[in-house]
Amino acid sequence: MSLGKYNLTPTLLYAIVFIFFFSCQKKEKNYFETIAINDIKLSSTPKPASWRYSHDENFQKFEDFQKLEKIKPEPHKNIIYLQPIGQFNKLQQKQIELTKEYLKIYFQLETKVLPVLTNDIFPKNVKRTADEGQEQLLAGYVLDSILIKRKPKDAVVLMGITEKDLFPKPEWNYVFGLASYEDGVGVTSMYRFADSQLTDSNFNESLLRLIKISSHEIGHMFGISHCLNANCVMNGTNSLTETDYHVARACSLCQRKLNSSIHYKHKKRLIELKNFFEKQHLNTELTLANQDLNLVQ
Image (tube, rainbow, N blue to C red; front, side):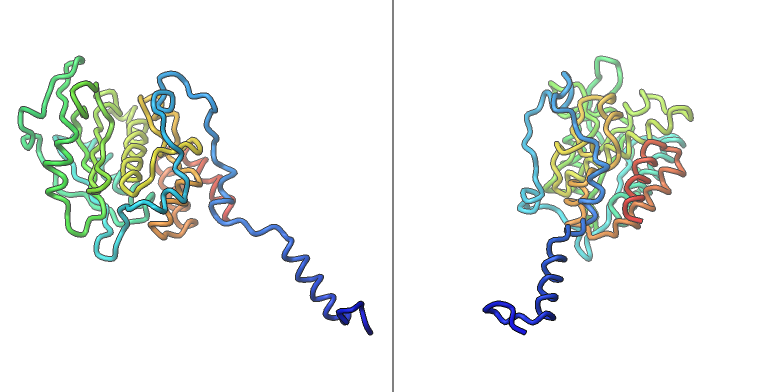
C-alpha cells in the first residue's frame, strides 16, 4: 500500500508517530529541578540593614561557577578538618562534635576534629578589647599564621572554631566567620551564637547558628558565592537576626554547584540530614529536609 510519494507502510507510519509522540513528552526532571519547587524565593526588595541591601553582588550562575578555579576533593586530599582554638566547656565541646557530625553529612566527606590549641597561641598585637568589654581576635591572623601552617596534607579544607569573638579589620565591629578560598582554610567564632553564654536552654539555637556559618564558610571554600537565588545557607548575613532567618538548607542551585564537585548520592544525604535534624530537635530544618526527601522517594 502506498502512502504518498514516500511510500510509507502503516507499520513505518506508526513507528514515526510513536517516536514523535514520546519525543514531545516533557523531559523527566533531574534532582535539582525536582527540589527547586521547595526553594523559598527571596524578596525582590531587600530590607534595610540586610546583607543584600548593603552589598551589590553579582548572581553566580551555574556556568559561572563551573568556570572557576576552585578547591575540589581529590583521592588523597578529601577530609574536612576542624581545629578548635581556645578553652571550651562541656557544652561547647558537644557543639564541636555535633558540628563535625553535621559537616560530614552536609558535604558527604569524612570530617575530623584536631587536638585543641590554646589561646596562648595569639600574640598581644592580634587582640583587642571590644566596646562591650570582651576580648576579640584578628580573624586574618587565625587564617594566615595558624591554620594555613597547620593544614594536614590530606585536608581538602580546614575550619578553625574559636570561643573568642573575631574582628576582620580595625574598622569592623566583629565577624562571624572568615575564609581564605584559595588556601582552603576558614574560621568560625562561637562567641555570639549563644549571646556569650552557652546554656542548655539556648544550646539548639546556638548549634544551628554554628552549623549554618560553618557550612556557609566551607561552601565558599568550594567556590560557591553568596546566594541570590533563594533563602539559602549561602545567603550573606549582617546579623544574628539575618542568620536566623536564613535556613540551613542549600537551595537547588547551590546544591547543584556543590554536587558538581562532590559527587554524593542525593537521597542518602537527605536521609542523613533528616535524621540529624530529628535527633537534635531542629524542627524547621527537619521539615525542609522532609519536603525535599518526599520529592525523591
